[in-house]
Amino acid sequence: MDQAIDDGVDVLSISLGDLAMPFYKDSLAIGAFSAVSKGLVVCLPAGNSGPDISSIENDAPWAMTVGASSHDRRVKATVKLGDGTKLEGQTGYELSTLNSSLPIVFPGFPLQNGTEGCLSGSFRNIDVKGKIVVCYIVRGTFVEMGVNVKAAGGKAMIIANTFREGITTYSDVHVLPTAHVNDSSLQKLWKYKKSNPNPTATITFHGTYFGARPSPTIPSFSSRGPSLINGGILKPDIVGPGVNILSASPVKPGPGQKAPPGSYFNFLSGTSMATPHLAGVAALLKSTHKNWSAAAIKSAIMTTADRLDLDLKPIRDDYTYDSRDTANLFALGAGQVNPQAANDPGLVYDIIPLNYIQYLCGLGYSNGNVSAIARRQVQCDKIHKIKAEDLNYPSISVTLAPKTKKNITRELTNVVDGGTEVYHAVVEEPNGTSVVVSPNTLRFSKLDEKKKFTVEFKVTGIPLSKGESAEGQLLWSSGKHKVRSPISVTFA
Ligand SMILES: *[C@@H]1O[C@H](CO)[C@@H](O)[C@H](O)[C@H]1NC(C)=O
Ligand SMILES: *[C@@H]1O[C@H](CO)[C@@H](O)[C@H](O)[C@H]1NC(C)=O
Ligand SMILES: *[C@@H]1O[C@H](CO)[C@@H](O)[C@H](O)[C@H]1NC(C)=O
Ligand SMILES: *[C@@H]1O[C@H](CO)[C@@H](O)[C@H](O)[C@H]1NC(C)=O
Ligand SMILES: *[C@@H]1O[C@H](CO)[C@@H](O)[C@H](O)[C@H]1NC(C)=O
Ligand SMILES: *[C@@H]1O[C@H](CO)[C@@H](O)[C@H](O)[C@H]1NC(C)=O
Ligand SMILES: *[C@@H]1O[C@H](CO)[C@@H](O)[C@H](O)[C@H]1NC(C)=O
Image 1 (cartoon, rainbow, N blue to C red):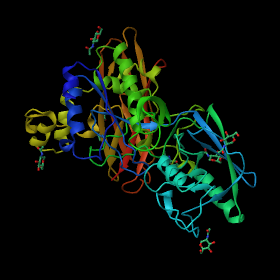
Image 2: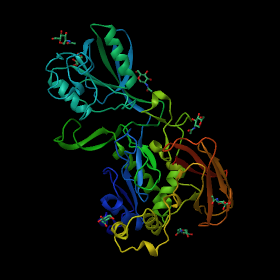
Image 3: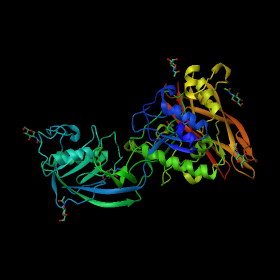
Image 4: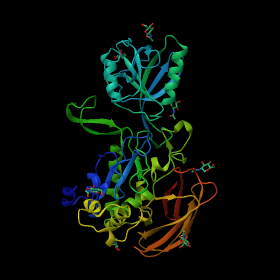
Protein backbone atom coordinates (compact mmCIF):
# COMPACT_ATOMS: atom_id res chain seq x y z
CA MET A 1 0.00 0.00 0.00
CA ASP A 2 2.93 2.34 0.69
CA GLN A 3 4.20 1.61 -2.81
CA ALA A 4 0.74 2.38 -4.23
CA ILE A 5 0.77 5.72 -2.40
CA ASP A 6 4.22 6.50 -3.85
CA ASP A 7 3.00 5.51 -7.31
CA GLY A 8 0.10 7.95 -7.13
CA VAL A 9 -2.64 5.32 -7.16
CA ASP A 10 -6.20 6.63 -6.59
CA VAL A 11 -8.12 3.47 -5.72
CA LEU A 12 -7.03 0.17 -4.18
CA SER A 13 -8.98 -3.06 -4.52
CA ILE A 14 -7.51 -5.64 -2.16
CA SER A 15 -9.32 -8.96 -1.97
CA LEU A 16 -7.68 -10.12 1.24
CA GLY A 17 -8.88 -10.43 4.79
CA ASP A 18 -8.59 -12.10 8.13
CA LEU A 19 -10.99 -12.41 11.03
CA ALA A 20 -11.54 -9.01 12.60
CA MET A 21 -8.85 -8.08 15.12
CA PRO A 22 -7.79 -4.89 16.91
CA PHE A 23 -6.74 -2.38 14.27
CA TYR A 24 -3.20 -2.04 15.67
CA LYS A 25 -2.65 -5.74 14.89
CA ASP A 26 -4.36 -5.65 11.50
CA SER A 27 -1.82 -4.94 8.75
CA LEU A 28 -4.56 -4.30 6.18
CA ALA A 29 -6.21 -1.74 8.47
CA ILE A 30 -2.85 -0.05 9.17
CA GLY A 31 -1.89 0.07 5.49
CA ALA A 32 -5.36 1.29 4.54
CA PHE A 33 -5.13 4.05 7.15
CA SER A 34 -2.01 5.48 5.46
CA ALA A 35 -3.61 5.14 2.05
CA VAL A 36 -6.89 6.81 3.04
CA SER A 37 -4.94 9.58 4.81
CA LYS A 38 -3.31 10.28 1.45
CA GLY A 39 -6.68 10.38 -0.33
CA LEU A 40 -6.78 6.86 -1.76
CA VAL A 41 -10.03 4.91 -1.67
CA VAL A 42 -9.39 1.44 -0.21
CA CYS A 43 -11.93 -1.28 -1.01
CA LEU A 44 -11.69 -4.45 1.09
CA PRO A 45 -13.92 -7.54 1.19
CA ALA A 46 -16.37 -8.19 4.04
CA GLY A 47 -15.34 -11.87 3.99
CA ASN A 48 -16.99 -15.16 3.03
CA SER A 49 -17.81 -16.47 6.50
CA GLY A 50 -21.55 -15.82 6.36
CA PRO A 51 -24.20 -16.45 7.38
CA ASP A 52 -22.62 -16.53 10.86
CA ILE A 53 -23.26 -13.27 12.66
CA SER A 54 -20.28 -11.04 13.47
CA SER A 55 -18.19 -12.84 10.84
CA ILE A 56 -17.25 -9.50 9.26
CA GLU A 57 -13.65 -8.76 8.25
CA ASN A 58 -11.97 -5.48 7.39
CA ASP A 59 -14.23 -3.47 9.67
CA ALA A 60 -12.16 -0.28 10.00
CA PRO A 61 -14.24 2.84 9.31
CA TRP A 62 -11.65 4.20 6.86
CA ALA A 63 -12.02 1.13 4.62
CA MET A 64 -14.88 0.56 2.22
CA THR A 65 -16.06 -2.86 3.39
CA VAL A 66 -17.77 -4.69 0.55
CA GLY A 67 -20.31 -7.50 0.90
CA ALA A 68 -21.60 -9.61 -1.99
CA SER A 69 -24.91 -9.56 -3.84
CA SER A 70 -26.31 -11.81 -6.55
CA HIS A 71 -27.50 -10.73 -9.99
CA ASP A 72 -30.13 -11.92 -12.44
CA ARG A 73 -28.02 -14.24 -14.63
CA ARG A 74 -28.17 -18.01 -14.16
CA VAL A 75 -26.60 -20.86 -16.09
CA LYS A 76 -29.43 -23.30 -15.82
CA ALA A 77 -29.36 -27.02 -15.14
CA THR A 78 -32.62 -28.86 -14.50
CA VAL A 79 -32.93 -32.06 -12.50
CA LYS A 80 -35.97 -34.12 -13.50
CA LEU A 81 -36.85 -36.78 -10.97
CA GLY A 82 -38.43 -40.12 -11.91
CA ASP A 83 -41.82 -38.89 -10.70
CA GLY A 84 -41.66 -35.85 -13.00
CA THR A 85 -40.69 -33.31 -10.32
CA LYS A 86 -38.35 -30.66 -11.74
CA LEU A 87 -35.67 -28.96 -9.67
CA GLU A 88 -34.04 -25.89 -11.14
CA GLY A 89 -30.35 -25.51 -10.45
CA GLN A 90 -27.16 -24.07 -11.86
CA THR A 91 -23.96 -25.39 -13.41
CA GLY A 92 -20.84 -24.28 -15.21
CA TYR A 93 -20.60 -27.70 -16.88
CA GLU A 94 -22.36 -28.05 -20.21
CA LEU A 95 -20.17 -30.51 -22.11
CA SER A 96 -22.84 -33.16 -22.56
CA THR A 97 -26.30 -33.88 -21.26
CA LEU A 98 -27.32 -37.10 -19.58
CA ASN A 99 -29.11 -39.07 -22.26
CA SER A 100 -31.21 -41.24 -19.99
CA SER A 101 -32.49 -41.54 -16.46
CA LEU A 102 -29.92 -42.86 -14.02
CA PRO A 103 -30.31 -44.19 -10.48
CA ILE A 104 -29.66 -41.67 -7.71
CA VAL A 105 -27.65 -42.47 -4.59
CA PHE A 106 -27.47 -40.47 -1.39
CA PRO A 107 -24.21 -41.25 0.42
CA GLY A 108 -24.01 -39.52 3.77
CA PHE A 109 -27.77 -39.45 4.25
CA PRO A 110 -29.34 -41.47 7.10
CA LEU A 111 -28.91 -45.26 6.63
CA GLN A 112 -27.31 -44.91 3.17
CA ASN A 113 -23.97 -46.46 4.18
CA GLY A 114 -21.85 -43.52 3.06
CA THR A 115 -20.17 -40.63 4.84
CA GLU A 116 -21.04 -36.98 4.56
CA GLY A 117 -19.78 -34.50 2.03
CA CYS A 118 -18.68 -36.71 -0.90
CA LEU A 119 -15.13 -36.54 0.42
CA SER A 120 -12.30 -38.42 -1.25
CA GLY A 121 -12.41 -42.13 -0.33
CA SER A 122 -15.87 -41.85 1.25
CA PHE A 123 -17.68 -44.24 -1.11
CA ARG A 124 -16.25 -47.56 0.15
CA ASN A 125 -19.57 -48.87 1.46
CA ILE A 126 -21.88 -47.50 -1.20
CA ASP A 127 -21.87 -48.21 -4.92
CA VAL A 128 -21.94 -44.98 -6.93
CA LYS A 129 -20.78 -46.44 -10.28
CA GLY A 130 -22.83 -45.15 -13.20
CA LYS A 131 -25.16 -43.26 -10.87
CA ILE A 132 -26.15 -39.71 -10.00
CA VAL A 133 -24.64 -38.90 -6.62
CA VAL A 134 -26.30 -36.39 -4.29
CA CYS A 135 -23.72 -34.37 -2.34
CA TYR A 136 -23.71 -31.52 0.10
CA ILE A 137 -20.80 -29.50 1.35
CA VAL A 138 -18.89 -30.46 4.48
CA ARG A 139 -15.50 -29.06 3.59
CA GLY A 140 -13.50 -28.28 0.48
CA THR A 141 -15.20 -27.01 -2.65
CA PHE A 142 -18.10 -28.18 -4.74
CA VAL A 143 -15.77 -28.77 -7.68
CA GLU A 144 -13.57 -31.07 -5.54
CA MET A 145 -16.66 -33.09 -4.55
CA GLY A 146 -17.22 -33.69 -8.27
CA VAL A 147 -13.64 -34.88 -8.66
CA ASN A 148 -14.23 -37.42 -5.86
CA VAL A 149 -17.53 -38.60 -7.36
CA LYS A 150 -15.96 -39.01 -10.79
CA ALA A 151 -12.98 -40.93 -9.39
CA ALA A 152 -15.39 -43.34 -7.67
CA GLY A 153 -17.17 -44.00 -10.98
CA GLY A 154 -20.17 -41.68 -10.49
CA LYS A 155 -21.74 -40.47 -13.73
CA ALA A 156 -23.22 -37.19 -12.52
CA MET A 157 -23.73 -35.12 -9.38
CA ILE A 158 -26.47 -33.13 -7.72
CA ILE A 159 -25.15 -30.62 -5.20
CA ALA A 160 -27.88 -29.82 -2.74
CA ASN A 161 -27.68 -26.90 -0.34
CA THR A 162 -28.43 -27.33 3.33
CA PHE A 163 -30.27 -24.56 5.20
CA ARG A 164 -26.90 -22.81 5.75
CA GLU A 165 -26.30 -22.22 2.05
CA GLY A 166 -29.99 -21.38 1.52
CA ILE A 167 -30.84 -20.49 -2.07
CA THR A 168 -27.33 -19.43 -3.17
CA THR A 169 -26.31 -21.65 -6.12
CA TYR A 170 -23.22 -21.53 -8.30
CA SER A 171 -22.36 -21.99 -11.95
CA ASP A 172 -19.04 -23.62 -11.03
CA VAL A 173 -17.02 -25.36 -13.73
CA HIS A 174 -17.40 -29.03 -12.79
CA VAL A 175 -15.66 -32.15 -14.07
CA LEU A 176 -18.86 -34.13 -14.68
CA PRO A 177 -22.52 -33.30 -15.37
CA THR A 178 -23.68 -31.43 -12.27
CA ALA A 179 -26.64 -29.39 -11.07
CA HIS A 180 -26.43 -27.26 -7.93
CA VAL A 181 -29.89 -26.90 -6.35
CA ASN A 182 -31.22 -24.92 -3.38
CA ASP A 183 -32.09 -26.08 0.13
CA SER A 184 -35.80 -26.62 -0.49
CA SER A 185 -34.86 -28.81 -3.47
CA LEU A 186 -32.81 -30.97 -1.10
CA GLN A 187 -35.95 -31.60 0.92
CA LYS A 188 -37.85 -32.51 -2.25
CA LEU A 189 -35.08 -34.90 -3.32
CA TRP A 190 -35.00 -36.64 0.04
CA LYS A 191 -38.80 -36.92 0.18
CA TYR A 192 -38.80 -38.48 -3.30
CA LYS A 193 -36.09 -40.93 -2.25
CA LYS A 194 -38.03 -42.00 0.85
CA SER A 195 -41.16 -42.82 -1.14
CA ASN A 196 -39.27 -44.54 -3.99
CA PRO A 197 -37.03 -47.56 -3.40
CA ASN A 198 -35.41 -47.06 -6.83
CA PRO A 199 -35.06 -43.30 -7.33
CA THR A 200 -33.93 -42.03 -10.73
CA ALA A 201 -33.29 -38.68 -12.40
CA THR A 202 -31.88 -36.92 -15.45
CA ILE A 203 -30.05 -33.60 -15.64
CA THR A 204 -30.49 -31.30 -18.63
CA PHE A 205 -28.57 -28.11 -19.38
CA HIS A 206 -30.20 -24.95 -20.66
CA GLY A 207 -27.47 -22.38 -21.04
CA THR A 208 -27.47 -18.80 -19.87
CA TYR A 209 -30.66 -17.13 -18.77
CA PHE A 210 -31.25 -13.52 -17.67
CA GLY A 211 -34.14 -12.24 -15.63
CA ALA A 212 -33.83 -14.44 -12.54
CA ARG A 213 -35.86 -13.18 -9.58
CA PRO A 214 -35.54 -12.08 -6.89
CA SER A 215 -32.47 -10.04 -7.83
CA PRO A 216 -30.25 -8.88 -6.31
CA THR A 217 -30.16 -10.91 -3.10
CA ILE A 218 -27.51 -11.37 -0.42
CA PRO A 219 -25.75 -14.75 -0.83
CA SER A 220 -25.45 -16.86 2.29
CA PHE A 221 -21.63 -16.68 2.30
CA SER A 222 -21.33 -12.90 2.50
CA SER A 223 -19.93 -12.09 5.97
CA ARG A 224 -22.30 -10.46 8.42
CA GLY A 225 -21.96 -7.76 11.05
CA PRO A 226 -22.14 -6.49 13.63
CA SER A 227 -18.45 -5.91 14.16
CA LEU A 228 -17.57 -6.66 17.75
CA ILE A 229 -14.49 -4.44 17.86
CA ASN A 230 -15.00 -1.25 15.86
CA GLY A 231 -17.12 0.55 18.44
CA GLY A 232 -20.38 -0.08 16.62
CA ILE A 233 -19.70 1.33 13.14
CA LEU A 234 -22.19 -0.50 10.91
CA LYS A 235 -20.47 -3.00 8.57
CA PRO A 236 -20.49 -4.08 5.76
CA ASP A 237 -20.76 -0.63 4.17
CA ILE A 238 -22.19 -1.68 0.84
CA VAL A 239 -22.88 -4.73 -1.33
CA GLY A 240 -22.06 -5.29 -5.00
CA PRO A 241 -22.06 -8.19 -7.47
CA GLY A 242 -20.12 -11.15 -6.06
CA VAL A 243 -21.94 -14.34 -7.10
CA ASN A 244 -21.06 -16.27 -10.28
CA ILE A 245 -18.93 -13.45 -11.63
CA LEU A 246 -17.74 -14.29 -15.13
CA SER A 247 -14.27 -12.94 -15.61
CA ALA A 248 -10.97 -13.37 -17.39
CA SER A 249 -8.82 -15.96 -15.63
CA PRO A 250 -5.07 -16.55 -15.84
CA VAL A 251 -5.50 -20.30 -15.23
CA LYS A 252 -7.65 -22.98 -16.75
CA PRO A 253 -10.92 -23.37 -14.83
CA GLY A 254 -11.11 -26.63 -12.95
CA PRO A 255 -10.19 -28.34 -9.72
CA GLY A 256 -6.98 -27.96 -7.79
CA GLN A 257 -4.31 -25.31 -7.49
CA LYS A 258 -2.07 -26.63 -10.28
CA ALA A 259 -4.31 -25.58 -13.15
CA PRO A 260 -2.31 -24.78 -16.30
CA PRO A 261 -1.73 -21.07 -16.96
CA GLY A 262 -3.27 -19.42 -20.01
CA SER A 263 -6.03 -17.04 -21.07
CA TYR A 264 -9.41 -18.32 -20.00
CA PHE A 265 -12.72 -17.26 -18.52
CA ASN A 266 -14.13 -18.58 -15.27
CA PHE A 267 -16.99 -18.12 -12.83
CA LEU A 268 -16.02 -17.25 -9.28
CA SER A 269 -18.05 -16.22 -6.25
CA GLY A 270 -17.05 -14.34 -3.11
CA THR A 271 -16.74 -10.91 -1.60
CA SER A 272 -13.34 -10.92 -3.36
CA MET A 273 -15.37 -10.61 -6.58
CA ALA A 274 -17.61 -7.88 -5.16
CA THR A 275 -14.71 -5.70 -3.98
CA PRO A 276 -13.31 -4.81 -7.44
CA HIS A 277 -16.82 -3.84 -8.59
CA LEU A 278 -16.90 -1.19 -5.89
CA ALA A 279 -13.31 -0.15 -6.67
CA GLY A 280 -14.43 0.36 -10.26
CA VAL A 281 -17.31 2.55 -9.17
CA ALA A 282 -14.96 4.51 -6.87
CA ALA A 283 -12.60 5.04 -9.83
CA LEU A 284 -15.45 6.36 -11.98
CA LEU A 285 -16.42 8.80 -9.22
CA LYS A 286 -12.80 9.84 -8.77
CA SER A 287 -12.62 10.67 -12.47
CA THR A 288 -15.80 12.76 -12.46
CA HIS A 289 -15.07 14.43 -9.09
CA LYS A 290 -11.31 14.86 -9.02
CA ASN A 291 -11.06 16.53 -5.63
CA TRP A 292 -13.46 14.40 -3.59
CA SER A 293 -11.92 12.79 -0.53
CA ALA A 294 -12.00 9.03 0.00
CA ALA A 295 -14.73 9.57 2.61
CA ALA A 296 -16.78 11.72 0.21
CA ILE A 297 -16.62 9.00 -2.45
CA LYS A 298 -17.65 6.39 0.07
CA SER A 299 -20.48 8.58 1.32
CA ALA A 300 -21.75 9.16 -2.23
CA ILE A 301 -21.77 5.40 -2.86
CA MET A 302 -23.46 4.56 0.45
CA THR A 303 -26.15 7.25 0.62
CA THR A 304 -27.39 6.49 -2.90
CA ALA A 305 -27.38 2.68 -2.61
CA ASP A 306 -30.58 0.74 -3.25
CA ARG A 307 -32.42 -1.07 -0.47
CA LEU A 308 -35.00 -2.45 -2.93
CA ASP A 309 -34.52 -5.15 -5.56
CA LEU A 310 -35.46 -5.04 -9.25
CA ASP A 311 -39.12 -5.70 -8.35
CA LEU A 312 -38.96 -2.83 -5.84
CA LYS A 313 -39.26 -5.18 -2.88
CA PRO A 314 -36.81 -5.11 0.06
CA ILE A 315 -33.63 -7.01 -0.87
CA ARG A 316 -33.85 -10.60 0.38
CA ASP A 317 -31.28 -12.73 2.16
CA ASP A 318 -30.56 -16.12 0.52
CA TYR A 319 -29.96 -17.56 3.98
CA THR A 320 -33.26 -16.61 5.60
CA TYR A 321 -35.18 -16.80 2.33
CA ASP A 322 -37.70 -19.37 3.49
CA SER A 323 -38.54 -17.39 6.61
CA ARG A 324 -39.42 -14.53 4.24
CA ASP A 325 -37.16 -12.18 6.18
CA THR A 326 -35.54 -9.43 4.19
CA ALA A 327 -31.79 -8.89 4.42
CA ASN A 328 -30.93 -6.98 7.59
CA LEU A 329 -28.43 -4.13 7.82
CA PHE A 330 -25.71 -6.48 9.07
CA ALA A 331 -25.94 -8.33 5.73
CA LEU A 332 -26.81 -5.44 3.43
CA GLY A 333 -25.04 -2.39 4.84
CA ALA A 334 -26.28 0.72 3.05
CA GLY A 335 -27.56 -1.47 0.20
CA GLN A 336 -26.82 -2.43 -3.38
CA VAL A 337 -24.40 -0.04 -5.11
CA ASN A 338 -26.05 2.25 -7.67
CA PRO A 339 -23.19 3.80 -9.67
CA GLN A 340 -25.33 6.31 -11.58
CA ALA A 341 -26.95 7.70 -8.43
CA ALA A 342 -23.56 7.78 -6.66
CA ASN A 343 -22.27 10.21 -9.29
CA ASP A 344 -24.77 12.85 -8.11
CA PRO A 345 -25.40 12.40 -4.37
CA GLY A 346 -26.27 16.04 -3.63
CA LEU A 347 -24.68 15.96 -0.16
CA VAL A 348 -21.89 13.94 1.43
CA TYR A 349 -20.80 13.08 4.96
CA ASP A 350 -17.11 13.97 4.80
CA ILE A 351 -14.40 12.79 7.18
CA ILE A 352 -10.84 14.14 7.45
CA PRO A 353 -8.04 11.76 8.52
CA LEU A 354 -7.78 13.48 11.95
CA ASN A 355 -11.36 12.37 12.69
CA TYR A 356 -10.28 8.72 12.52
CA ILE A 357 -7.56 9.42 15.09
CA GLN A 358 -10.14 11.13 17.31
CA TYR A 359 -12.32 8.05 16.91
CA LEU A 360 -9.44 5.68 17.76
CA CYS A 361 -8.64 7.67 20.89
CA GLY A 362 -12.38 7.59 21.69
CA LEU A 363 -12.33 3.80 21.46
CA GLY A 364 -9.88 3.85 24.38
CA TYR A 365 -6.84 2.69 22.44
CA SER A 366 -3.53 3.54 24.12
CA ASN A 367 -1.24 6.20 22.67
CA GLY A 368 1.04 3.39 21.48
CA ASN A 369 -1.79 1.60 19.73
CA VAL A 370 -3.10 4.72 18.01
CA SER A 371 0.46 5.67 17.02
CA ALA A 372 0.96 2.18 15.54
CA ILE A 373 -2.07 2.71 13.30
CA ALA A 374 -1.34 6.34 12.41
CA ARG A 375 2.38 5.52 12.02
CA ARG A 376 3.31 8.70 13.82
CA GLN A 377 3.32 9.77 17.47
CA VAL A 378 -0.20 10.49 18.71
CA GLN A 379 -1.06 11.61 22.24
CA CYS A 380 -4.73 11.06 22.84
CA ASP A 381 -4.94 13.47 25.78
CA LYS A 382 -4.01 16.30 23.40
CA ILE A 383 -6.77 15.34 20.98
CA HIS A 384 -10.50 15.94 21.16
CA LYS A 385 -11.80 12.37 21.34
CA ILE A 386 -15.03 11.43 19.61
CA LYS A 387 -17.37 8.52 20.14
CA ALA A 388 -17.77 6.00 17.33
CA GLU A 389 -21.44 7.07 17.18
CA ASP A 390 -20.35 10.63 16.38
CA LEU A 391 -17.86 9.85 13.63
CA ASN A 392 -19.33 11.62 10.58
CA TYR A 393 -20.16 8.27 8.99
CA PRO A 394 -22.75 7.83 6.21
CA SER A 395 -24.56 5.18 8.28
CA ILE A 396 -25.79 5.57 11.85
CA SER A 397 -25.37 3.02 14.59
CA VAL A 398 -26.18 3.65 18.27
CA THR A 399 -26.46 1.65 21.47
CA LEU A 400 -29.30 2.58 23.81
CA ALA A 401 -29.82 1.60 27.43
CA PRO A 402 -33.41 1.22 28.73
CA LYS A 403 -35.30 4.49 29.31
CA THR A 404 -32.48 6.66 27.98
CA LYS A 405 -32.08 9.43 25.44
CA LYS A 406 -29.03 10.06 23.35
CA ASN A 407 -27.94 12.62 20.78
CA ILE A 408 -25.55 12.01 17.94
CA THR A 409 -24.25 14.61 15.50
CA ARG A 410 -23.51 14.65 11.81
CA GLU A 411 -22.38 17.23 9.25
CA LEU A 412 -23.40 17.35 5.62
CA THR A 413 -21.38 18.97 2.80
CA ASN A 414 -23.02 20.25 -0.36
CA VAL A 415 -21.36 18.89 -3.49
CA VAL A 416 -23.76 20.54 -5.97
CA ASP A 417 -22.42 23.56 -7.82
CA GLY A 418 -25.17 26.13 -8.29
CA GLY A 419 -28.76 26.53 -7.19
CA THR A 420 -30.41 26.32 -3.79
CA GLU A 421 -31.78 23.05 -2.50
CA VAL A 422 -33.84 22.60 0.62
CA TYR A 423 -33.60 19.17 2.23
CA HIS A 424 -36.17 17.70 4.61
CA ALA A 425 -35.38 14.90 7.04
CA VAL A 426 -37.67 11.87 6.84
CA VAL A 427 -37.05 9.21 9.47
CA GLU A 428 -38.11 5.60 9.63
CA GLU A 429 -37.89 4.99 13.38
CA PRO A 430 -36.33 1.72 14.53
CA ASN A 431 -38.85 -0.28 16.60
CA GLY A 432 -38.80 0.71 20.25
CA THR A 433 -37.35 4.16 19.63
CA SER A 434 -38.40 7.65 18.76
CA VAL A 435 -36.03 9.67 16.62
CA VAL A 436 -35.98 13.47 16.32
CA VAL A 437 -33.74 15.28 13.83
CA SER A 438 -32.93 18.92 14.51
CA PRO A 439 -32.97 21.00 12.53
CA ASN A 440 -35.12 18.86 10.27
CA THR A 441 -34.76 21.20 7.30
CA LEU A 442 -31.42 22.17 5.78
CA ARG A 443 -30.89 24.72 3.02
CA PHE A 444 -27.79 24.58 0.82
CA SER A 445 -26.91 27.15 -1.82
CA LYS A 446 -23.12 27.11 -2.17
CA LEU A 447 -20.69 24.38 -3.19
CA ASP A 448 -18.83 23.01 -0.15
CA GLU A 449 -21.34 24.58 2.25
CA LYS A 450 -21.47 22.54 5.48
CA LYS A 451 -24.42 22.10 7.87
CA LYS A 452 -24.57 20.22 11.16
CA PHE A 453 -27.56 18.46 12.65
CA THR A 454 -28.31 16.27 15.65
CA VAL A 455 -30.35 13.10 15.89
CA GLU A 456 -31.97 12.42 19.23
CA PHE A 457 -32.79 8.80 20.02
CA LYS A 458 -35.20 7.92 22.81
CA VAL A 459 -36.22 4.47 23.97
CA THR A 460 -40.01 4.29 23.92
CA GLY A 461 -42.67 1.70 24.55
CA ILE A 462 -41.43 -1.79 25.12
CA PRO A 463 -37.76 -1.89 24.18
CA LEU A 464 -36.42 -5.04 22.56
CA SER A 465 -34.34 -7.30 24.79
CA LYS A 466 -30.73 -6.55 25.64
CA GLY A 467 -28.45 -7.23 22.70
CA GLU A 468 -31.24 -7.11 20.13
CA SER A 469 -31.12 -4.68 17.23
CA ALA A 470 -33.75 -2.71 15.40
CA GLU A 471 -33.37 -0.83 12.16
CA GLY A 472 -34.64 2.24 10.40
CA GLN A 473 -33.30 5.01 8.21
CA LEU A 474 -32.71 8.73 7.93
CA LEU A 475 -33.45 10.23 4.54
CA TRP A 476 -32.58 13.80 3.58
CA SER A 477 -34.67 14.57 0.54
CA SER A 478 -34.70 17.71 -1.59
CA GLY A 479 -36.94 16.35 -4.33
CA LYS A 480 -33.87 16.37 -6.57
CA HIS A 481 -31.54 14.39 -4.32
CA LYS A 482 -32.06 11.66 -1.75
CA VAL A 483 -29.35 11.14 0.87
CA ARG A 484 -30.14 7.97 2.79
CA SER A 485 -28.45 6.62 5.91
CA PRO A 486 -29.40 3.28 7.43
CA ILE A 487 -29.93 3.43 11.21
CA SER A 488 -29.08 0.49 13.45
CA VAL A 489 -30.04 0.61 17.13
CA THR A 490 -28.76 -1.98 19.58
CA PHE A 491 -30.44 -2.20 22.98
CA ALA A 492 -28.10 -2.42 25.95
C1 LIG B 1 -35.59 -23.48 -5.04
O1 LIG B 1 -35.71 -24.54 -5.96
C2 LIG B 1 -37.05 -24.89 -6.21
C3 LIG B 1 -37.06 -26.19 -6.98
O2 LIG B 1 -36.39 -26.08 -8.17
C4 LIG B 1 -37.72 -23.77 -6.95
O3 LIG B 1 -39.06 -24.08 -7.22
C5 LIG B 1 -37.70 -22.54 -6.07
O4 LIG B 1 -38.18 -21.43 -6.78
C6 LIG B 1 -36.27 -22.25 -5.60
N1 LIG B 1 -36.36 -21.24 -4.58
C7 LIG B 1 -35.88 -20.03 -4.74
C8 LIG B 1 -36.20 -19.08 -3.65
O5 LIG B 1 -35.22 -19.70 -5.70
C1 LIG C 1 -25.19 -38.10 -24.60
O1 LIG C 1 -25.24 -38.32 -26.01
C2 LIG C 1 -24.39 -37.46 -26.76
C3 LIG C 1 -24.69 -37.70 -28.25
O2 LIG C 1 -24.70 -39.05 -28.51
C4 LIG C 1 -22.94 -37.78 -26.41
O3 LIG C 1 -22.08 -36.90 -27.12
C5 LIG C 1 -22.77 -37.53 -24.91
O4 LIG C 1 -21.45 -37.85 -24.50
C6 LIG C 1 -23.77 -38.37 -24.10
N1 LIG C 1 -23.67 -37.98 -22.70
C7 LIG C 1 -23.22 -38.81 -21.75
C8 LIG C 1 -23.13 -38.22 -20.36
O5 LIG C 1 -22.92 -39.94 -21.94
C1 LIG D 1 -26.37 -50.67 3.56
O1 LIG D 1 -25.70 -51.84 3.95
C2 LIG D 1 -26.57 -52.84 4.38
C3 LIG D 1 -25.72 -54.00 4.91
O2 LIG D 1 -24.76 -54.36 3.96
C4 LIG D 1 -27.47 -53.29 3.26
O3 LIG D 1 -28.40 -54.26 3.69
C5 LIG D 1 -28.26 -52.07 2.77
O4 LIG D 1 -29.01 -52.38 1.64
C6 LIG D 1 -27.30 -50.94 2.41
N1 LIG D 1 -28.08 -49.76 2.08
C7 LIG D 1 -27.85 -49.07 1.00
C8 LIG D 1 -28.72 -47.88 0.79
O5 LIG D 1 -26.99 -49.35 0.18
C1 LIG E 1 -13.27 20.99 -5.49
O1 LIG E 1 -13.24 21.71 -6.70
C2 LIG E 1 -14.21 22.72 -6.78
C3 LIG E 1 -14.22 23.29 -8.19
O2 LIG E 1 -12.93 23.43 -8.69
C4 LIG E 1 -13.92 23.78 -5.73
O3 LIG E 1 -14.85 24.81 -5.80
C5 LIG E 1 -14.02 23.10 -4.37
O4 LIG E 1 -13.70 24.01 -3.35
C6 LIG E 1 -13.08 21.92 -4.28
N1 LIG E 1 -13.38 21.18 -3.07
C7 LIG E 1 -12.44 20.74 -2.25
C8 LIG E 1 -12.93 19.95 -1.07
O5 LIG E 1 -11.27 20.93 -2.45
C1 LIG F 1 -1.36 -2.10 22.04
O1 LIG F 1 -1.81 -2.09 23.37
C2 LIG F 1 -1.58 -3.30 24.05
C3 LIG F 1 -2.27 -3.20 25.41
O2 LIG F 1 -2.41 -1.88 25.81
C4 LIG F 1 -0.08 -3.54 24.15
O3 LIG F 1 0.14 -4.77 24.79
C5 LIG F 1 0.49 -3.60 22.75
O4 LIG F 1 1.88 -3.72 22.80
C6 LIG F 1 0.11 -2.36 21.96
N1 LIG F 1 0.52 -2.56 20.57
C7 LIG F 1 1.07 -1.61 19.86
C8 LIG F 1 1.40 -1.99 18.44
O5 LIG F 1 1.28 -0.52 20.28
C1 LIG G 1 -30.35 16.79 21.60
O1 LIG G 1 -30.21 17.94 20.81
C2 LIG G 1 -31.39 18.72 20.75
C3 LIG G 1 -31.17 19.84 19.75
O2 LIG G 1 -29.93 20.44 19.92
C4 LIG G 1 -31.73 19.23 22.15
O3 LIG G 1 -32.94 19.96 22.10
C5 LIG G 1 -31.88 18.03 23.08
O4 LIG G 1 -32.12 18.46 24.39
C6 LIG G 1 -30.67 17.13 23.03
N1 LIG G 1 -30.94 15.92 23.76
C7 LIG G 1 -30.05 15.33 24.56
C8 LIG G 1 -30.47 14.03 25.17
O5 LIG G 1 -28.95 15.79 24.78
C1 LIG H 1 -41.31 -3.66 14.16
O1 LIG H 1 -42.32 -4.25 14.94
C2 LIG H 1 -43.39 -4.76 14.19
C3 LIG H 1 -44.49 -5.19 15.15
O2 LIG H 1 -43.96 -5.97 16.19
C4 LIG H 1 -42.88 -5.90 13.33
O3 LIG H 1 -43.91 -6.43 12.54
C5 LIG H 1 -41.80 -5.37 12.42
O4 LIG H 1 -41.22 -6.41 11.68
C6 LIG H 1 -40.72 -4.68 13.20
N1 LIG H 1 -39.83 -4.01 12.28
C7 LIG H 1 -38.52 -4.12 12.32
C8 LIG H 1 -37.76 -3.37 11.28
O5 LIG H 1 -37.93 -4.78 13.16
